[in-house]
Length: 143
Image (cartoon, rainbow, N blue to C red):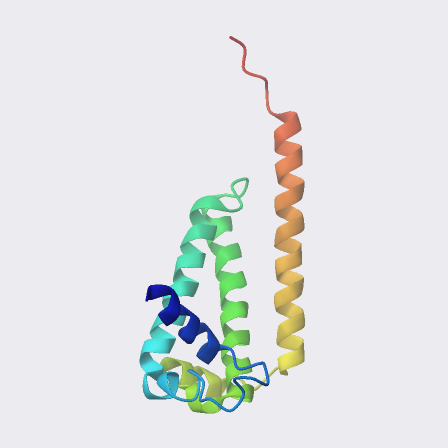
């Protein structure tokens, strides 16, 4: 029964095939009615990612450096998410997300996407670089 319920949920979440194209999806039924819950979960997810980046990522940076780096990454990613939703499904915006979307008109969606991907690529390359340089330059433990 659980698998059947999850299958139904997955079908309603992603209406990409011809077979289920006529059925109402979650974005048009449940999420429109519970927009504050949706954005609460989204903000909680981004806060969780921020916490993970600060505590586990960029270990070679100082605590302030980790905080600033994580904050910049999360801020740009979240503003891209809000701007994309504003362009694609403005009816899903509510609360703080709606206020932010109304005030985020300076950059186009394309430039926001480019900035986010450049920042993520830079963070990934930095992580790979520091992983290998730290791995090969740290002193060996002797028994």
